[in-house]
Length: 165
Image 1 (cartoon, rainbow, N blue to C red):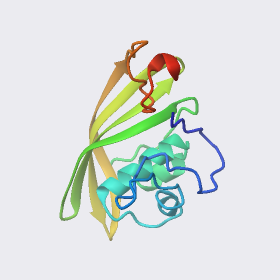
Image 2 (cartoon, one colour):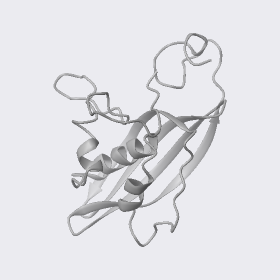
Image 3 (cartoon, rainbow, N blue to C red):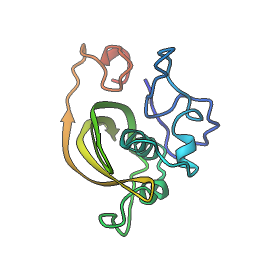
Image 4 (cartoon, rainbow, N blue to C red):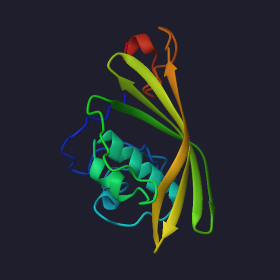
């Protein structure tokens, strides 16, 4: 299970929470190879890269990064993250780019207390002065009801009863 502990100290060697994979080797990228440079100030190359880094920031309870990468026209004044939320899996469904605008559709699976949920969102991004920013999104929250013998929602590939139940 890819459980991502909030507020954990990251060395960069562990797998990136966003789940990005090296296309040549099919191996998961480390945090240092993937989202860490963006969290340290490097500009995201694409809307999808920014969205993945924002997912990782959520998994790591990094509200400052989320605020910095949120377009000022739609950014909330106060951004509070729930440190008990356990972000488990990100699946990018679709991504497109047209000039200085982009969209990314994704499903992010998470656990709050004893309940499993999926955030499905089509996010919109805008590029300003060479940097991508999250603008807004159409979000749907779905409560998951994993069955004992079904696949675990954490993304491990194991049965729920053998994993997170």
